[in-house]
Image (cartoon, rainbow, N blue to C red; front, side):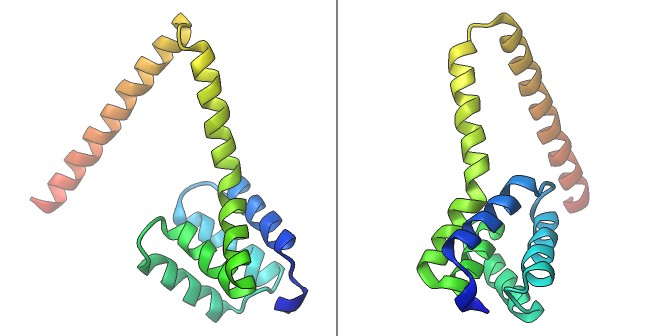
Length: 138
């Protein structure tokens, strides 16, 4: 089966996964499994579990590492690059577009107010996490 899979197939599949899966590592892993094991049958369930295990053990973002492991298994180095670029393309493009928008609009009074509110919300979320973690560890 691996011989019939092209680098383009891998790139597009991981672009889809990177673009349409939300909710963190575990929801993305479910999407990986559905697309790669059940739908495309590019991997057996055992190969998928092995890739997830290696992805978790390797330093770095586990979901990216899992994608790299799968890409390498399918098409070696070219497959690893295809999964990495496919998986990260949409997020990178959105970050660049938002940065360009911010640079052009940073003097906008409404945007300044929104960013102050977002900053306050982030601080509140971080403090909430710190307090919850402190309660369970102290």
